[in-house]
Amino acid sequence: MSQPPPSYPVPSGYPPGASPSPPKYRPSGWWFVVGAALVVAAVAAAVGLFVWTLSAFFSTDATVPADGRTHTVTVGTDGDRVLWRDTAVADPECAVVDTTTGDQVDLRVVTSHMTKDLNEDHWTAAYRFDPGSGRLDVTCAAGDEVEIGPAPSIGGFVGGIIATVAVPGLLGLLGLVTLIVTGVLWASRPARPKG
Image 1 (tube, rainbow, N blue to C red):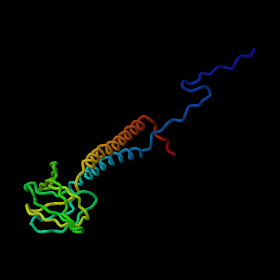
Image 2 (image 1 turned 60 degrees about the vertical axis):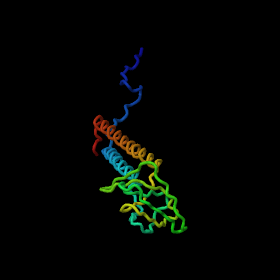
Image 3 (image 1 turned 120 degrees about the horizontal axis):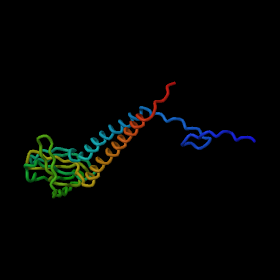
Image 4 (image 1 turned 30 degrees about the vertical axis):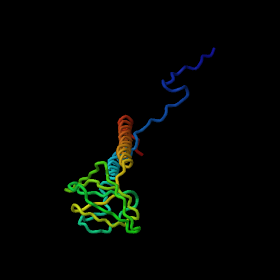
């Protein structure tokens, strides 16, 4: 009688007849650079979006002396404008005329308390108005000077704050996950053979 061939044990974890898969090596060191770049991009996005969100408060189309004389200025026409007064002045007593049409511009009193402090200057929003053609004759009689700039919008401000938190948060999280996963794989896997 013939005997069956001897049985060899099959290595555990592999089906009979299958060879083990090749070893997995460390990820490229460039993945650390990618993770770090994402973290740096998160910081840059946070700063950039924060400045962009507050830009309506800091932008000024024109500064007009409050000397009782008429001054012609040009302002943007991409949205309402705000006339900022010195906080120490209760009412700058201003009148604004659109030079293109000759019509008096309707100055709406700002009922919310909007202020901005730049260096030593303290400003309070006095009037909000539609700039019409953008070429205006401005006459103010009280205080030293007034500023005219873009009107901050609540929707834009809230959207900017959300973007300032969300975009850098996602970039930073993605960067940290990339660094952690790359670090774990780097420490737990063998180096690639050279050559």
